Length: 346
Image 1 (cartoon, rainbow, N blue to C red):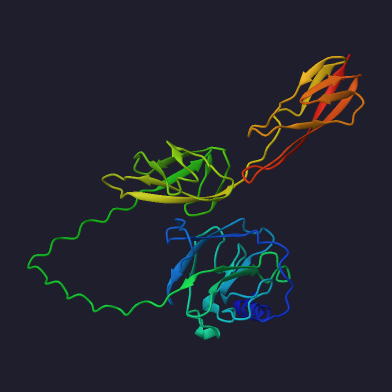
Image 2: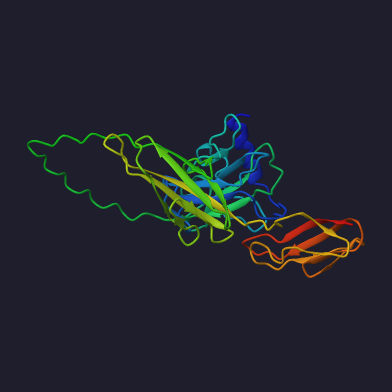
């Protein structure tokens, strides 16, 4: 599908009115970053001609996304003031041939003041609008508006006077190539600036090799969420985004290198340590009283082959007995819903 047809399709959808409200928030996560992919906090402030940088998490597998500049629409509607008809102000993010950007890369979007597409970002709230691409445009589940702050730069100061050249300028120092890093977490290769994942209270052990053979160091730029102990990173909450930096000091033939690895935090899953056990008729067996996160487990059964009191199961007659287990969850971990199969023997 050529870009002209894509832009035309975008413009038609962007001008549509009476769109039904979104049923739920978009799954795709948009995280503002610096040019090197390091996460930044808050809403970025940019002027016309400047570039926004961001990475994407939980990118859809069924279709790509369009991204373009827009004025914030009414809740539940698609925007009516957009840059969708201007190719330079429109992105097609997809793995498909011809897409303008790969979803695994740091995304770059150079903004304008909105005048070219009938808006005024100086006085209106502008941002980036995301929605499914032409392969799935009727689906509004990925519709989302992500605002930025538009600023008008102050008048440019007069240039400083040129330095007087010396009679014998020093030779420019040789520029060394940056060291290269190969980084893994729990044995899985990581890609610099690409959004990875970490689960609440599930440690990630980093390892890195360098072309210079120099020893690397690890630093967390979000220590309140993901502190670093040696080469181990652990998430202290069930949501948010961490920024872990790996640095090589280089050597005489390699310049120092720092690579950033953003990590999207997700809640942990509570589970039983065992899903089956056995007990003799007339005897009792104890099941775990709490989860690994300290939540009390409630056990119930409708079987005639056993009975349950608290976390203790008593065998009544031979056969199989299914015991249901449940425990509450929090924002850091899911609720427990599981079963234990108890085999009652003679």
